[in-house]
Length: 106
Image (tube, rainbow, N blue to C red; front, side, top):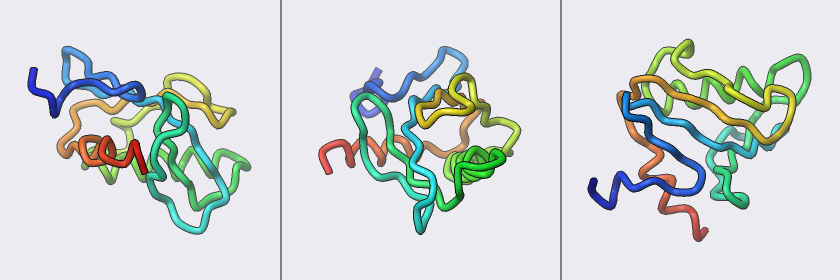
């Protein structure tokens, strides 16, 4: 395994190629974007309020677009109602998470 695919605290890569991310969601932001690392989770600011599932929908949309997969390939495994979430991305086409690693010390 090369160092570029080594896992970081907020990411696990499964044997099937799926990616599991630990996310700290921050709803109500101006723009949806990765904002670095918060503890052992990837912090993502969401341009949606935390009401009626809107922030979750925006998070799924953002990750599906970033990993170039259909939205149905991104699932919330844990934390549907909290800021702390575990998400799984099946068969990612793109790997933006490798760039996000570089923001850990931002």
